[in-house]
Length: 236
Image (tube, rainbow, N blue to C red; front, side, top):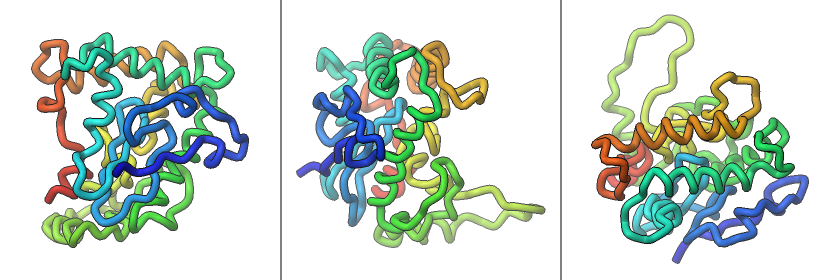
């Protein structure tokens, strides 16, 4: 049984339905995030910010994203397929469309992230802007694993504010992705002007593929993809 995916209209004040949410995003996935996750959640954030969920005991939902992006279903995600998946997400977020994601479009996505984060035990009451460093593990209880691992991290003497630490230091959205981005869409905003252009998105897509293609064969497989921090924590 897969986790449910709420509609964009239910999660945004504008009630705008994006194209990716109107179509089938794949099993358990969507731009806006999963339904309730409890008792060892399976949560995966794709390189392009899509959220996928699985029920406890089910395979980790990275496979859902991979199957969606692997257009010909041959178990090999090529650079062309990776780029196509990224472009489909960009088009879904570019509601005008004008080949750029502006702050008002990005904030709709952020509301979806807030809603997804609120379904994860220990993070239900956390508000504030997406991307704000979380407080350690945020009280998340994964069969005691978080507390156990956190207790093994030796204290580091520092002066002034301490940097966040641990697998969930920047919150579950960051930990559920490959690159530890609290806000995946803004990660493409290289000039930090609060707008992501089509060119910035294309360049970011290339960077992310190269970062994942560690053996430089031009193909990604499930076996060669890294485990996310959240996946490693839950599996332990």
